[in-house]
Length: 201
Image (cartoon, rainbow, N blue to C red; front, side, top):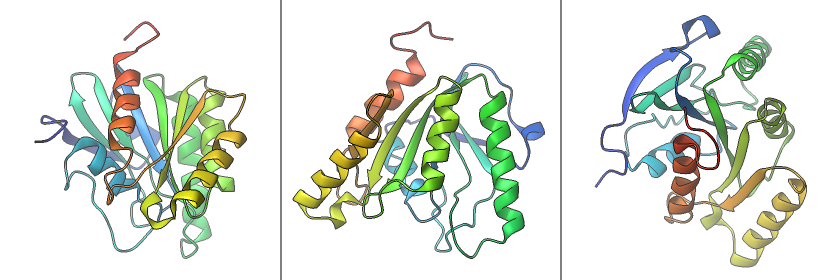
């Protein structure tokens, strides 16, 4: 059974002028092009074909919107960090992301997908800083955790938590393939979209 039975694709945007109406609440998913972002979205929503999983990292260069309910959305941000992407594309990504985080009032949180085998990188930290700079919540999903041994996975989690200490950033191990951490990620998503601990929109 799907966790989000009524979730549907809304639209794709190539510029801030094409974004959907800035109302209600939305949670953004971001991550490196090969971190498993689309797979994570599909696992968290329980919809295997919702976000397209490409065999070519860096293929998605648009902001994709999915509607969960009236004025409740998920936002799939363009992947980043893939070496074969031209410099012009990277510059366009930077401008688009900067503008999105600077202007989007309905954004309530960022779920950042990070390959557990790599840990936080420079662009991952930039995404977190953009979110925190707007006073938004952030949570790191250390994906592909099933590819690490238990002790190494715990070490990576603790290192990530230590780096995020003193902020409102959470972190957890996650594996779509191993069905690990999916319920915890769903809980975070639901809390943000429902406005738990704050005035809901």
